[in-house]
Length: 387
Image (cartoon, rainbow, N blue to C red; front, side, top):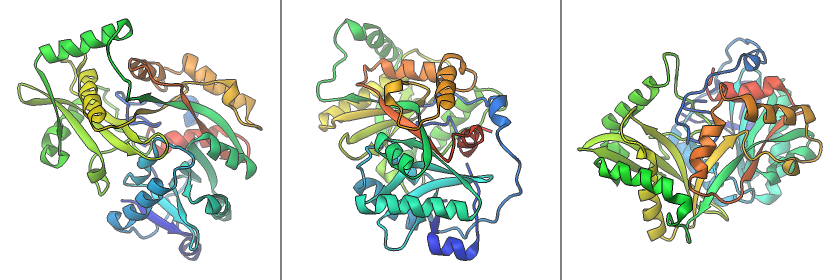
């Protein structure tokens, strides 16, 4: 359930709130594996007593203002903005300002998703108010999945911002799988269909038991201690489900995999390849075949973009860094791209996305209130329930 902070209410109550993250942190519900936390990140987290949660509000009452904000306030171009509607998120707002800040509390940190989803005149006042709200409570803010305009605004407010990875997207109007570049992908897709795969768009409410079975099989294949991640990945169900789309793959009538797509607003409007899961084993090319059928559907509807979401440590480029960035944190991101496979499977995630010939990467950023902080970075993982 999403919780709503209004600045005045939060000050009166002195209340604070719990946390989360689940099938893979970082953007994207394109996570096919479960995250194993690195010990160096664990060392960045201090144990703190549990906090007293603010009163919970009904999810539907909160979904409307957040949905309105992500639909209307698209200047930053965040392709993952719909994740703001995930259950469990907390929402900060200020009377008289048109916008919201979406975040989760972990320990002494507020982990913010994206920048403020706010009207242009209210964006920086809302950021100022949220930063003050955190500082008044001796909490540190770390914001993740910022876009370039967000990162530049945060720097103006005293934050340290660094590139943390990139999002990837495919323009659909001229998309085709013809040609030598896609031969291997075509072969995998054809093989899946020859092995009996059928794909259709379904209402998940009619397939709850089957989808839960896929989830259990998927999670069981990740190891004894694996658990699903959340916050920076998509979800099924809840008040926002009516806005998503689900494509289900079956073999001989038995569900074997699915991909959920969430809406993307703004200049690159379209759909985001969000939560994707499959049963272990089975035919190669299963997920690729499901996605290919979704692409056919989207193209027939005139959809212009298919987004593949955020992958950390990918698309790194010194030219993307903003003024005042941390050289040490920049080094860490490149190190994790080269050697962080046990922490996060960025290379395999990128390999799947590159099969579809995405356009240039869209850089994404993390920002810390003050100097870049390993503890703050660790709390991003903790908010995702990576540990």
